[in-house]
Length: 102
Image 1: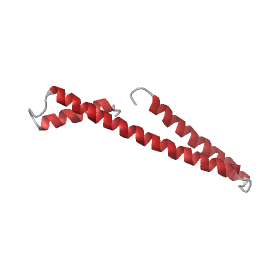
Image 2: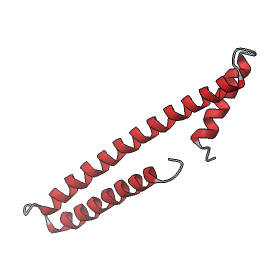
Image 3: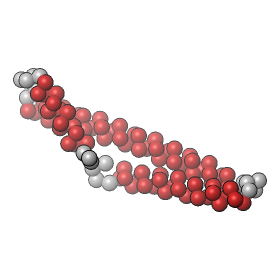
């Protein structure tokens, strides 16, 4: 199931309001949903950025392994492939974070 942060935030805010009948106005429930959505988007963005950083570090590690003369030829090819894969994942995460609804 692919639930957007806006949908999830609305469900949580509505459930909170339902558990406390009369405690929140419609406007307060919408404000709560917006605040929850902001927190979810922020947490998601920060986690995605951390994952990009890990991928970039792994790419650098494998690139430096492939560049060392002491690295056996069979491992160099593997290291290049892993560096490319890590860079691909970092790029995919960056693009995912730049899209609408991210």
